[in-house]
Length: 174
Image 1: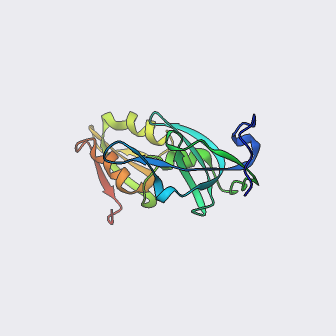
Image 2 (image 1 turned 60 degrees about the vertical axis):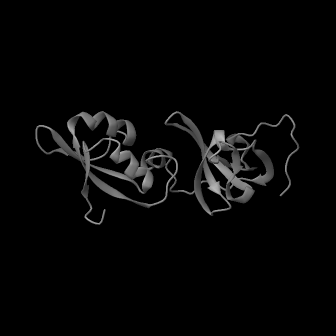
Image 3 (image 1 turned 135 degrees about the vertical axis):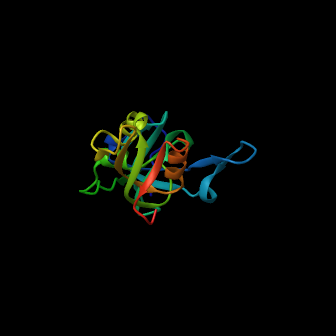
C-alpha cells in the first residue's frame, strides 16, 4: 500500500481513504510499548467518539476483519494510505454502537442483561445507555432495566463499582 508523504493532506474521515498506525500501551514501568509486537493497523475510519473523557476512532480494521475501536491518544501519528476506505456496513448504526459498548474495549458476548438497581442509579444508566432501554419499577427503592452490552470484564467492573446497588438479574447464565 502506497502511503502519502507527510504533506499538507489532512488525515480525516472525509478523505475516504484508509489510514495506518501503530497502537501502544504502557508497561509496568510506564514506558510506551507497541501493541501486538508493533503490528501496523490498517483502518477505514467511520467516526470518532468522545466517551469517558477519551477520544476514540471507530472503523473497519483490515487486520481483524471487523469494526474496531482505538483510543486516539494511544495511536502513533496515522498515515493516510492511497487506498479507498471500505464502506460502512449497511447495518452499522453509530448511536447503537456507542450505547452498546460499556467502554471502548473489552471482550465478551454481546447480549441483553437485566439489572436490578437502586433508584438512585437511573441517571447512571441513562448516561451510559441512553434513554431508550426498557425498565420497570420493582418496588419503592428499585427498578429493573434491560441493557444491551458486551458481557465481559469491563462490564463486570462497571457493575461492581456500585458496591451492591446494582445486581445482575438475568439471564441466568450470566
